[in-house]
Amino acid sequence: MLTLHTLKPAAGSTKQRKRVGRGNASGHGNYSCKGLKGQKSRSGVSGLKRMALKKALLQIPKLRGFQSDKPKYQVVNLSILSRNFADGAVISPDSLLKAGLVSQLKHIKLLANGELKLKNLQIKGIKLSAAAQEQLSRLGGKIVE
Image (cartoon, rainbow, N blue to C red; front, side):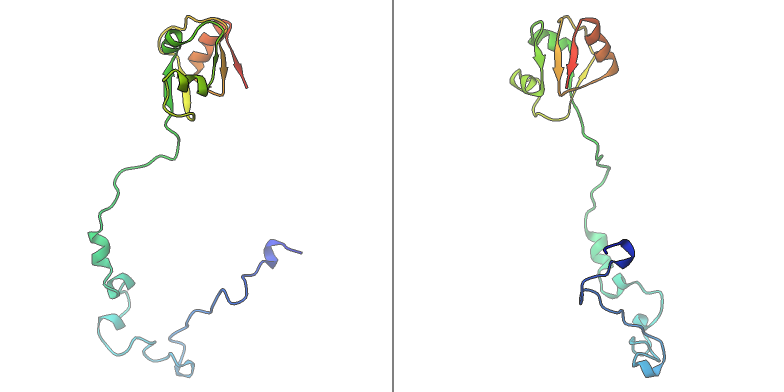
């Protein structure tokens, strides 16, 4: 039976780490594979410094700022809907794209800037702000899923 406590990695996919400094009988005693003296034999020297990578890492330009994983909505105001559609129209991402109000079919949101003058609108597959939803319901519009 496959359960969490019986999961094991595939055969040959893992290998034992080298345990150094466990006595001369192990073959990795005394100097623990570091040789005699010098900076590399001391403790506390970062691997990056030993491999000469630290300087290279510091020279690489870093991407600054913050990139949000939340979508940036394309905003359509209610006043623009009044100019581009007629009473009783079905407003969907496709119809907004055809009217040239959005550039792509995803992440669209209707906001309540301006006054909505159209009656019986049907909104399909678009997010609305609370104020836009209130204006829509006041004029007999509805949200169709």
